[in-house]
Image 1 (cartoon, rainbow over the protein chains, first blue to last red):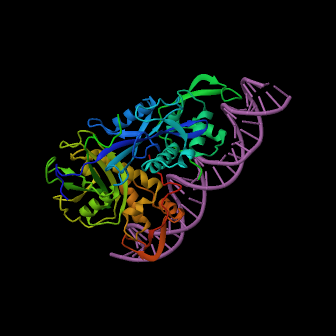
Image 2: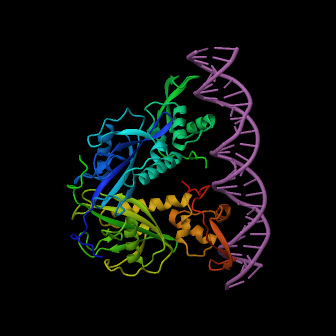
Image 3: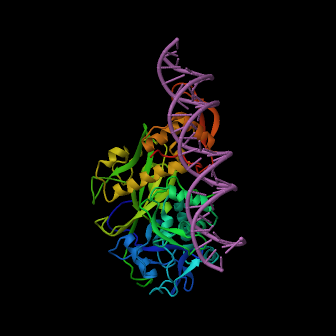
Length: 229
Length: 229
DNA sequence: ATAATAGTGTCTCTTAGACAATATTTC
DNA sequence: GAAATATTGTCTAAGAGACACTATTAT
């Protein structure tokens, strides 16, 4: 083939978002009901077409804000999906982004999506999703699960101040397992600047008051917190 | 914004390839000299536009074959790059793929690239590359380095039969460090089905004959082979 | 014999994970 | 006090890395 400035097939380029949070001890994802064809009425991931003059991360951040009203969450590129028939209208390549958010208030109904809402992952997996969004969702969840092992990203799911038990709850919800509270506690505090203590405590988890922490500067987790296989 | 079947800005979609191998104990990458504008005469990663009816992996495999003549190597999606001004001609989103290949004969001159050749990574990093290919290259190298830790991908760099020392040479070249031959040997054999022994030996590495192995079925490496920090 | 590399064994230190024990709340 | 959770400590086993030692070839 020849690389030239003319004669390439036209593509549309979109971003799709896998926006995860933990609510009521379950890993949840933000999904919308499609308001038009194709896949009218079906559940789908939020997303939309990239504007002519914005970068891919900008497009992802813009869509995120449109859907959730929240701007300051962790956003990273997940993967791209471009099978020729993934959109019946035309050739669309979609770049998926992964966002991890603290437990947000019910999202504002998006301007272009009838009903944006949080769904537990397991429930959503039993439904048919529009396009290849099941595939994207699986990739996103697996990425999130994997990243908890060797990065400090679990704090992205937490509010600004949190207890070690709440942080453990993130791991338990995302991995769908139980962790030993004592070993987890020791492990987190052993990792340099994973969390920073405040002088406050809380009894919101019941029992003896727990110290409140904030996220530290560390990003890598070494040694990692292994996900039991 | 509105999701509709009309009115999206047109994009061109391309694939770029980070094709790595190990030659003479150095991590090398396949690069081409651009035969036309923009960036005429500059060094670039191989790649090209996606055809209307092919999937992204198909496009990557096709470009790989066109550049190297080799089809059966590991290929995985790396990331996508779509800054509005990354290509001066038009808006182009490029999906980068990472390929790990055994030490191949000098690649056939591609039909669309004047001079495809292997370059040691360190040498290429000192040159200016076309587009944002320096960035893509860095991401690809980092991905490869990282994957050696927790997958068996190092065998993708090896010929069909190899010695443990040759496998170690892959790690040493990619990570640019030295590993203890004895601990490495023990570690590789301790991982279930990482490598499978043949009945053959070779003396091509000098000294006592070494047993030849082939890649096993394992893909994950657990416990991982840690890259010294 | 000497040099070179292959392969095995041993020791020490760190970490994971099981779990005992203590601390501080609420009811 | 009983129940619940927080936090610290202890023990054991597995793995990492340092390195001694033996094995088998070429020269």
